[in-house]
Image 1 (cartoon, rainbow, N blue to C red):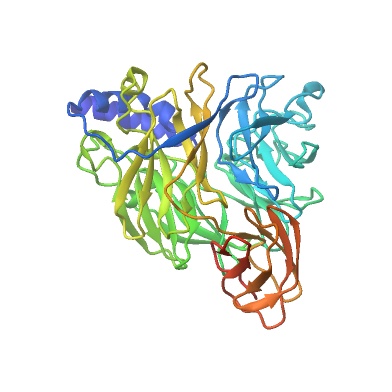
Image 2 (spheres, rainbow, N blue to C red):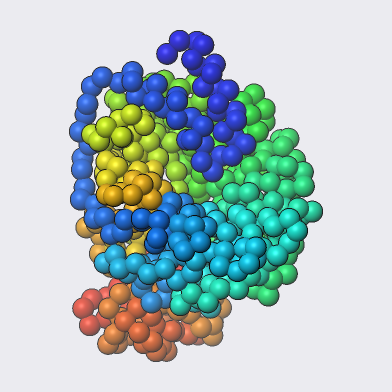
Length: 502
């Protein structure tokens, strides 16, 4: 790659930073050029992926966020396009792949119900889902919405974005914090660089922080994660190459913002996702940056990194470290820590898919596993007919992983939904993940009918089996932070993360 080409790709990368939720569209020529330079094919350690759904437009198209598992054991998500109005859908999918559209966006006049949901949904403690749309609403002009939707598809608008507060441009997924309120970020505000906001369950909106584009960066992509200390952690992106590179930060539930560290380009930039692991540290992926010698792109092919709560980073892996980028390029979408302690995620490009449509586009993406110390294994390379441009993963309570792709499929370029089994067993998870003594907690899992006991870190709890996928339990007196254990007729199932008792 000569110097003129590198300069061209760097200019494209600068433009991509203004819309970092999907930088790969702007960088496609660079990836294609990189792919042409590759001459040797190396096979990945393939895993069997089961395609569950082919999105065909009528049932939605272009899912762009991760799936979330509901209290009934089914998975829920959104598509950016398609449906009866062509403005996106909300859908339900069983673990076996039976799909049902539960809502078509823009069925109300002037799309006052919102249109084009780009982020995924969050499961709230009341069992309903909350999300955002990038357009529609009842404001003038319409700039998107925050909405609530039941598992059956009854939708209501909590808030309509207005241009005096925020443009709902590429909003990240919402999270529900321990105080019951919802928090999220957008990439456009009155100052132009993104904001952090809060919405109460009743729809009261508060703008908490607006990025300045200076040392605090802007265009936040990663989404917020609430840490065990109660703070909300995330990362902003740099505005352009040569400008301040973005900031790893924490913000309190009340809006007190604190920058922890400017993100070093070599560690990874345009941070895509963060998770707090069971060891208390944060792990994440960045869509750019890194030091892989095989990358060939001056802005890097992406990284996997570790970050302490004080802001100390450790670069663990640079993507495109394998010949021909069979390990993937540009990690994207939800990163999840599996019940085996390893991290699982996806890349949008790279891999060894042999379909000509993959080769011409720089690869259709991969699924990878990476240890907490940075040893990466490519589990699967997409090959277009099974999907193209995956969106990250979620681990179901049956132990398998589930996800979607934005494009590809058998007969229509509308994306797919898939599952991946790596041999991990079933587990239970709690909703919420913390609570005081006496608090009611949902325990979610599979095949829970007939369970004979529930305990919180060894202390027995009173409980009721609601359905095969849900138990309600009360945090017992004497309980301390630790594992929730459910004795089912088949086996004893442990929670995937410790339940915290304040």
